[in-house]
Length: 356
Ligand code: GDP
Image (cartoon, rainbow, N blue to C red; front, side, top):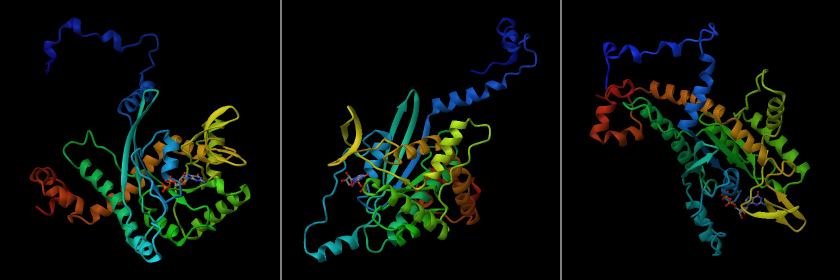
């Protein structure tokens, strides 16, 4: 219902509550952060994490440990390659293709909702020629940008679901002597599209000295090959000392050496997530045993920065490239344009208008 000014009676107008004679200089915008906070809490957060790495490096186990939730309850873990003669095994490897599996869970903690999508890429690195698996993953990342661009230019921009990939955990094998050519090629292929966080898998298979050596080697190779990984922003000078120290520690731990486990084990009278060995228990959430907690802290405390870098850098790159290409339709638009309704909705927008 729309009221005109005349229809509001004098009693309904309550100017008194909008002035504060005791603090005349106080306007009230100091309250804005609280409003923003309340609004974001109400709206909830959306985050998409992609995990890439060769099969068997512990990606699913780590993701389940990170969010204390079983994201893949129905997944059947394949056994070893079929114990047939060598030839069929080889064929199996040639034919393996990467799949994209996106699972979304809504997690709520103290009233704050997080809509988390984890994009797993089973089959990555299994084929002898990995070029196709690159293509599949890159197309997926681009499609999410394309969808966002389309929704943003559409008629209803209020409820856009953001499925853009905000972060990619790239799993590196602990058994090699650094990066493999596949690791280098893949990271270079995606570093302008997504925030890469390198992770050394199965850290329990390495001694402390081996970990340090491998970390240094990987960082050197990342620099040598000009790979752009996600850089944690420096803490602002007015942040408290603990936060500054935490940021320094997190930066120094990259690439994170992690251990994952879905089992609860009794250690020192407590039930902990860990891996039981004849000589003791490796605790997932013990910072002295591995960087799991640091990785989780990095993700949680920098979730907003990861989103901002995705928006301001990767999405902007995509968007300007996309607009430069002008009226050419992507495969995503072509699918959409099959529906007459969508064609009408898209007509007014410059990047497609050339076609009509
Ligand atoms: P994915 O194929 O990369 O998703 O790997 P999975 O999570 O399915 O794990 C493959 C195997 O590695 C399973 O037997 C896990 O129990 C084991 N695994 C997972 N994380 C670790 C770890 O941190 N250390 C060790 N030693 N084994 C692990």
